[in-house]
Length: 274
Image (cartoon, rainbow, N blue to C red; front, side, top):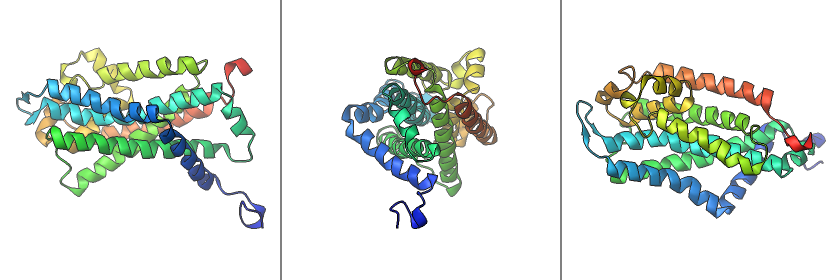
């Protein structure tokens, strides 16, 4: 019998993707510097802002610290998905790893499934760490109802998929590994400032809110605020409400749009390879 399965058949794309995900996860956690940077930076940024700005927000029933912590959950998730996956794939392409993987007898989708498994593990771990710090030091309250836990789950899942697909699509923009980091970090940094992570939505200029509203990070942050902040805090949102239906609609649209972008723009070879 063939080791790949009964009748000599190779394992399916999902199973191969799961195995590939195991390889991706092992490789990630072996790079200690990348692990520390990935998990520590959002926590450090959250701690700095939440410690500096901790006044009570009149009429919202929360502190500025709680507002920052809830929004940083979205930024942390986008860091482990969009930023890391985009830089990682661009580097693998530049080093020729993608060409070798493409030549292997496995479905191409298995490679992307492996990346999504990596994002799932690191994204959940990052979220758990940020929650632990927020609950322990900044009075963040865990969801008290099944409905809010369910909202946390779907915002986390849709946000993770949308940002991962966007990162895969963006990975084709850098010309080489050296340019990957600035090209991926710059838009992520800008989005944090116009999506309600570091600056409250009701304090930003109208054009900033409009631009930020086009991208998934703003809606991820809004969804997380709906989960972890009291209903009185919804007055701080652009529409005076959590708008969870719109959050689901925009994130779902980015999942579909991101998939289309991946299918139409992804490159297995570097530009220097022709």
